Image (cartoon, rainbow, N blue to C red; front, side, top):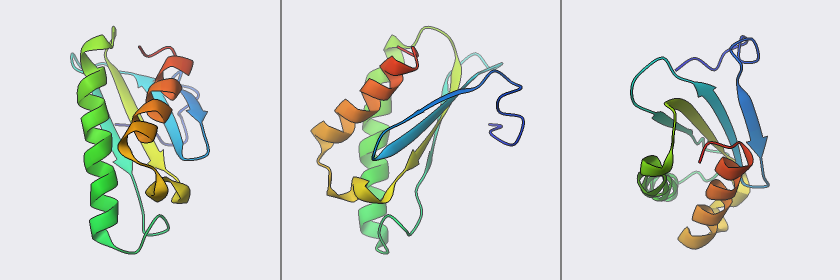
Length: 103
């Protein structure tokens, strides 16, 4: 996945909320790919960070069949996300996907 300085040149789009930033690039691969960036600013404990990653992967699995074109998706987790439960994470990420017209 390439989300470097040429992001706009490659026709990338992004949307953000209080808890997540989602960046999307059209993919040259046949399948869509997802990636998560989550650092220690969210929480120092690895258990908490891994729980958030597991929940996001579950959302990706639910959303994947509804994606029309193959895309590369990058989700950056912001520090306030550790207080969210699964339903709120799912709603927030899906709303960002809808905003970006990925679904």
